[in-house]
Length: 586
Image (cartoon, rainbow, N blue to C red; front, side):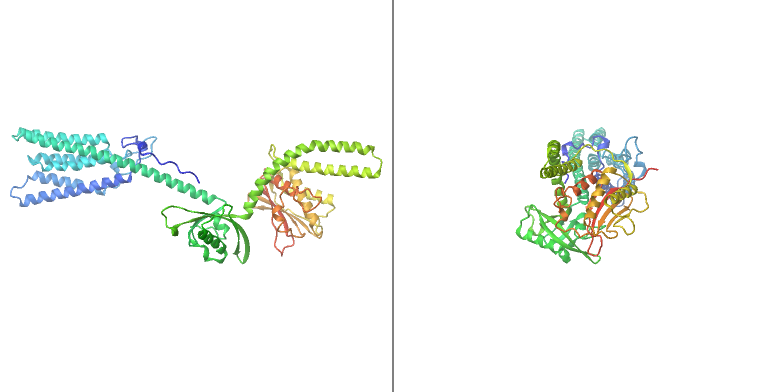
């Protein structure tokens, strides 16, 4: 699993006055603006209603100008909550920057000039006019709290303080004007000063709180985005894993599984995953039993457990051996019934092949080193034996010398075979026509072994008519194919078409080369060791033939495997080489 990145530090998140390109538009700002817009609309309707009632029923009705100001304010405030993406508030794209999102909130996370002009500007003008018309009544002073709060929350700190300072100047100017008309100057200025101090305090405290909440929201958004990306990466990694992974609860319900796990237990790839129970089908009961035993004992074997599933598909039953490893979630404070099990499922053949590959790679390096050390002593023994053979006269001694020479020659072949597949400098393989190359190799091999290739001959070449090209060294291809033909010829019946060589394309990217024999099927207990070095069923065999074939195939990006056929087939022993297909040059 990829380690999750550290969440952003709130202290590193820029304030609302930071660079324009680094601050995303927060969803809460749009909601807050809408709340203020609704409050302004309600306030406008309330002021209009109250002034209308006073005009109709009060003994001393207010001037009609007050009613007119309230009506105009209500008309201007009512449409604001309905704003969505008015064109007047959408700024054009700036060179080198992404286009601004629509709406009254700008890139810096604050009101755009047109938006605060149509809201705060209208509020300040309307409330200032109402304050001037109210005379010595201080009721209109409380109205200024709304634009100050709105500026502190939705504007940058400097602009918010500028709005609050403007309100204080309006209040002080109104008090000074009243003092000129005969009102008590000390009382009016004191009252205006106290209200102004409160306005400034509200602006500072509300602005600081709003910035703190905005930073926390940005931090939360960044953490959620990192968590979303982490979950997406983990999901992609699990889906691409070759090993199966399933999340199973105590009842045996599979809550999540990757495609590899579904394929291993015999389910087709699903477009959308749906939970299912391991106890719902008889073929999955071994999995369910292992799961219940692990839940009951609370013990998970580190090396895993092996089991066999009898999977049925289209009337055929296939026995599949799986390796199972379990891991439980051990969280404190979680109810035991909610404990989940992470089940890793792996094909036993794949697991064994990987283990053998690692073992053989190490063995190959050691064998190559030993072969280098053996070559020089063998050459000395061969030379000394040849000199000694010239001096020997007795038949028994000559026969012993020939035995030494034969065994030295055999050891030299083994050394050459080991060095052939030893790691070395790889060179680019030439592009060859597989059909022509295999036909030539088959003809040469048949001539050497006295094997006919006609309609009634033991060797049958089915190469098709299509030109199939691949990159493979011709000498190495000859060595691989000759080795497979020798093995097939050694164990075949010798009848017509006893050995079958077939070349066929597989899609546009691969070519399949098959060598089949009608001999006795290879025993199942021998099959896992076919490609291991120094394993042979013959007393005179070196056990390096198939191992060298596999190493040479892997050198050129090809693969070789043994694919046994069922009891009804004539050619039950089939070795298949998968080569990369390359387009032939024009």
